[in-house]
Structure formats: C-alpha cells, structure tokens
Image 1 (cartoon, rainbow, N blue to C red):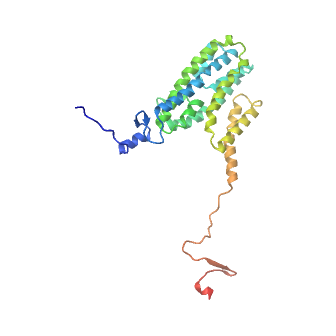
Image 2 (cartoon, rainbow, N blue to C red):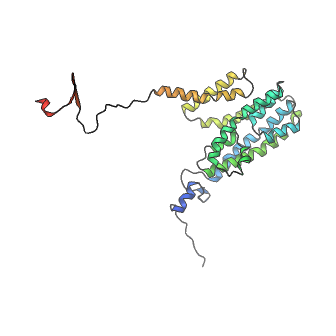
Image 3 (cartoon, rainbow, N blue to C red):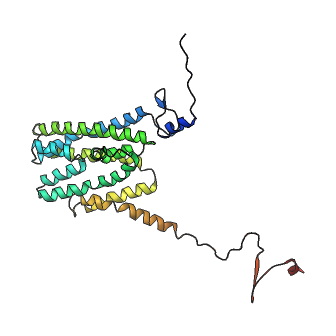
Length: 289
C-alpha cells in the first residue's frame, strides 16, 4: 500500500524563512500574503521586455539614417544598451553635431543609470562575480519592473527576465532596422525615434500615485522641454532631476516649522501655579476661604 503524505501547514520556524524571501510555493502560487507568484513576475517582465525590445527597430532605422554603418549601429546596441543615450547620440550626429559633443551628451544622459544601480544593488544583493554583468542591464525598464516587487526573489526574477528579453530583442531588432532602413526611405517621416520615450512614459505613468509625485514629474517635464533648445543633448534631462528637491523643499515649507517644546510645562501630578505680581505660588484649598 502506497504511503500517504499529508501536506504540512505553514507556520513553523523553517517555513518563516521560506516565506520571508517568497520562496514558499504551493499549487503554483505563493502562499503568504504580500508576495507575488513567480509566473506573474515573469509575465510582467516579458511584457515590458518584448514591448520595449521591439522598439530597437526604430533605433536601427534612425541610426542608419543618420549615417552610421551597420557595424557601428549594432555595436551601440551591444555595448551601450541604453536607448535614450543611443537615440541622443544618433540624433545629434544626424543634425550635423560634433561627434565628441554628441558622445558627451549621450554619456551625461546615461549617468542616470548609475543612480538606478545604487538602489538596485541593495535590493538585488547579487554575488560580486555577477554584478559587473548585471550592471550592463541596469536601465529604465529593468528598474521599473524590479522596484515594485514585494520580495527579493521576485525582484531578481523580474530584473533577470526583463534584462535578458530586452537585451536579446533590442539587438535583433536593431539589426533588422539597420538592414531595412533603405526600404523605409525617409526615416524622419515615420517618427520612430519617439517609440522608446513613449514606452517609458507608459511604464512611468502608473507609478505616479501621489500628488507630490505628479507635481515632481510635471515640473521635470517643464524643465526638460524648456531647456532643450538651450543646452546640449542629455543635459536638460539631468537638470530636470532638480525638480525632486525643489518640490520636497516647497512641501516642507508648507508644513511650517515644527512646534517648540514648552520648557515651562508643569510636571504631571503638580498643581497649577497662580501667577501674581510678585511671582507665582501654588494654589491651595485655603485660597477659596
């Protein structure tokens, strides 16, 4: 007769550690509240990776239209792998800008990824040997998928699936776009360079849940658009980051100064003191006689 096993209940000391990192699974879903099934994380990550990865076609077309060769275009996607910087570089070159100035603008625009890395390094806690390779995937989309995850396990899955899917598709579609640029004719008429920013805005919008976040985002947009004709490519985006401290400063002023502690407050259990012309004294029952 086959031995029958009964499912164990969650709640023991050994189960607590498994639940803490979201690794306890039953019937394909996470048992404890506050975690997320692995399948759901993979589904969300694949959705972002595929949607944004396909926009690499727009970069390939735009890059080829700006005069870069097929090898140069593919090398940018392989080794730079940050869409905003890549579009900024080829856009500046297409406008007749100096290559060194265009590269500097793309570099400054890519600086934001280093700030993403500071947050993700704590959240993912990857082994040291893996970090240099994972750093290449620290971009807007992987950060947007990783940060909302409720557990470290879910964050690692979301980061890995998004990064891998996006990297493979971005490079493949870059190649296809560069090869098919001649068939499309005038690439500016298609407006393909707007594809990547549009996808990023679609990812960002649901994350703006509070008034402070919406005001910060709105001020950042105003700064970026207002400075766009005045500063080199990439710099307006960096300057727009000043919107966050400005909004927080104004919010702090609206709250006003913190109340001061009353140093002359009466200790608990003490009778109130009646103020007089010559000082103060404790009120007693005899005062009413």
